[in-house]
Length: 242
Image (cartoon, rainbow, N blue to C red; front, side, top):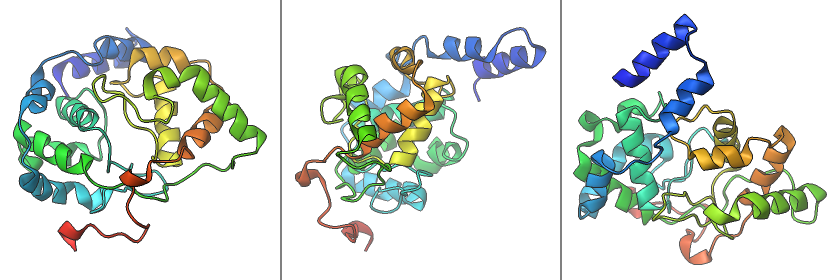
């Protein structure tokens, strides 16, 4: 935890500021240029070293990078390298709270900025799970239709028509992600619990009800992924670790 966060925690404990104020202060500059993130983005990745570094990540995200359907760990395979670098750098800098991942993301566990560059390039090239965890409502149901409308009205501008995201703007790829994981992250962002969230997204989804949240995430979880980005089957095994 960085000094700024410790300071805020003390103020919270004393009742001198509210949690929302502390979170708001943290996300004013949700993606300020500079630091390890910028350094890693500029480095030329070494995929062989990235594969070696990924062994640490695979303990939770699996050797395929597919995470788990129950959402405990997200699918990271095929995610934009820029997004992966930002999230890792934020966790290392204490800008995103992730107690489970924090010790594994530290330099002593996976290396310096070069390691970030290497491992994220490796992960981005992994084929995605063809059977990601999906929400409860299939196409043709009223809930699916409502979720589709919510997505088109609120999410397309940043995350794209197909949930493809925007690497240059650090908007994550949502297509192919597990429903349960996205649902948890959406709730945390909406409620101000994910400190490195884009404040524009927080404003956009602040008024969503729990049901609307579930419907829009259900729709996203069912957006078809381009077959070229998918593994040949759910039984595919990463040959680098076979």
